[in-house]
Amino acid sequence: EPVIDRRKGDPLQWWRQNEGRFNLLAKQARKFLCPPPSSIPSIYGPNEGWSSAYPECRERNQSPINIVDQDTKISTEYQELTLEGFDAESSNKTSMKNTGKT
Image (cartoon, rainbow, N blue to C red):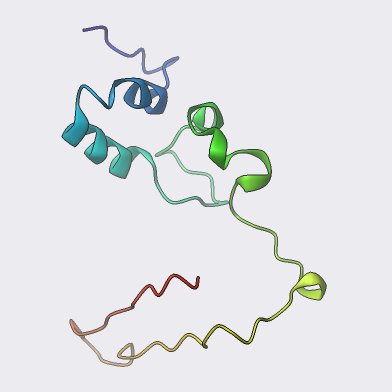
C-alpha cells in the first residue's frame, strides 16, 4: 500500500478515493480531517486541495457566508431560537434540537 507524502499529498483526496476499501475507518478519518468550516486559519486542515476533493463546497458554496444586513429578509415561518438551561452552573440536561430550520 503506498504511503501519502505528508508534504505534498492530500489526505482528504486519498480517503475520498479509498473510502470504499476502508468504510468504517473512512468515517473516522472524515470526522477528524474535515473540521467545521471557519474563517480562522488552522494548522489542523489543509489550506489547499479541499475544494478539489469536495467541489460541492467551493467557490460560491463555501463558508463563512457573508450576510448583508440590508439584503436580509426575515421569514415569519421560522420560530425564534430559544436556548434553555445555559444558566445552570453544571448542567448535563442542556440540549439543543435540530429542527432543520437552521
